[in-house]
Amino acid sequence: MDAVNEALLLEACIYCLLKFYCMENLNLLELFLQSSYQTEIRQTLDLMSAPRGHVNLAGYTEKRYKSFVKYKTAFYFVYLPVAAAMRMAGIDGEKEHANAMKILQEMGEFFLIQDEHHDLFGDPSVTGKFSTDIQDNKCSCLVFQCLLRATLQQRQIVEENFERKDPEKVAQVKAMYKVLELPAVFLKYEEDSNSYLKSLLEQYSVPPTIFLELAKKIYMCKSDLEIAKALRVHMPGFLGGGV
Image (cartoon, rainbow, N blue to C red; front, top):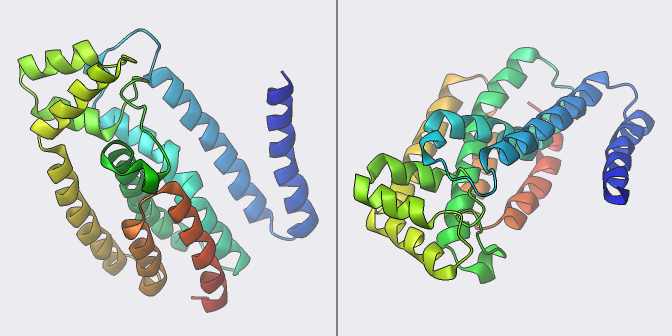
């Protein structure tokens, strides 16, 4: 209960600080309230998608995964810091924010898929993490891409070894991902996502250099910490550059 209370206290501090420093910018307060709401939805979806002791691969669909992307990463991790910088710079138009959301949602989707891929196939000394998505029964891009390509026999192997703590069973799932060439699938997706992002920048009325620089940093990063650093470094330039 202490941890729950401290978490609520930390969240309350967000709004105390916003009131103290940004009282004149109500849009900023609304943005953080929306972010808190979407973050709770994200956590709920995460918990609902991975019930302990019950593996149901039929539920791991692209539609379901897209809903995770929307709430899990795109909003609070990518859109929130950029949108907050836009509000602080006086960019309050709904059209500008809607356009930014479409572009940043694509970046957020890429980041999550990249993160899942690097967690499993990357070097832990670089990523700083050991992936437990297989052991924890998580609906990741890797598992639904695996199911799209697997034969009935391959699917059965994945199902029998999914959500198992035994390293050998985890290794069998990982080996199946390699048999189905999922690392190559990711590289192709990386190219396609980058091209699609550039087409979005041409389509919508946003300052392209700002978003291209941010995208470049995200596409080159290998860990969550690098992404956070990229956003932190990028925002002062955004605020100083205007539109």
